[in-house]
Amino acid sequence: MRIERIELYQLSLPLLEPFIISGGTMTDRRSLVVVLHDGEGHAGYGECPPFELPFYSEETLGGARLLIEQVLIPRLLGREMETAEEVDALLRVGVRGNPFARAALETAAWDLEASRCRTGLAALLAQRLGVA
View 1 (cartoon, rainbow, N blue to C red):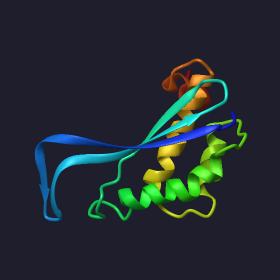
View 2 (cartoon, helix red, strand yellow; view 1 turned 120 degrees about the vertical axis):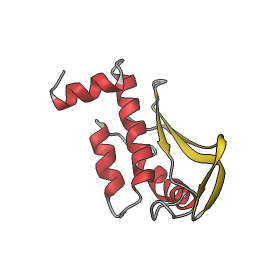
View 3 (tube, rainbow, N blue to C red; view 1 turned 180 degrees about the horizontal axis):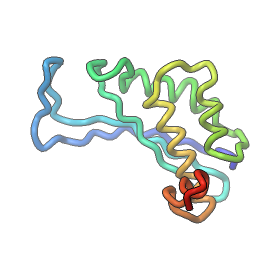
């Protein structure tokens, strides 16, 4: 699969009730959504949901966005890869930590591969793991 286009969106979902912890109060939940497109009309979706401040993990929404935009997207765009595992291996080179950012693109790659195979993601994973 060749990654021809990558989109990055930021969502803001209002919470029904404020989320209050010692680090502060949140009234909405922000997240990034990555969409990978191949040249044949298939798309794969992944989500990057770290918090805006590092009270849950070291990774933050702003840091993840910068890493995705400046490092990970350029690394994948225009590349020919056979499987989502190849995408994951490419994302790990020289990038320590940042599991949310890497997982967003890896998940989108798995979803894209499933779309290209005209199957669901669960079926693709079961087949790959030999439990189908």
